[in-house]
Amino acid sequence: MPWCSSLIVRRRGSRVGEPAPETRFEAGDVVVVLGEPDSLAAAEIRLLQGTK
Image (cartoon, rainbow, N blue to C red; front, side):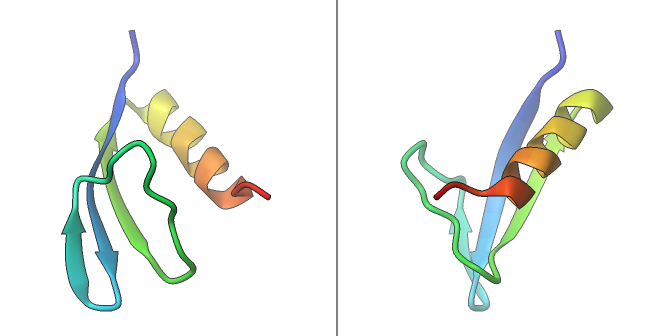
């Protein structure tokens, strides 16, 4: 089964660490993820789409 995990979020030069499920990403955040290629592609799409 493919997997993907967020490892680190960097915000305004500070390391936020592993995000909690309720973490809301902000413009300019850098999200570092590790996972299988298919899962990484899906995570990228989801992150780029955002929520409204």
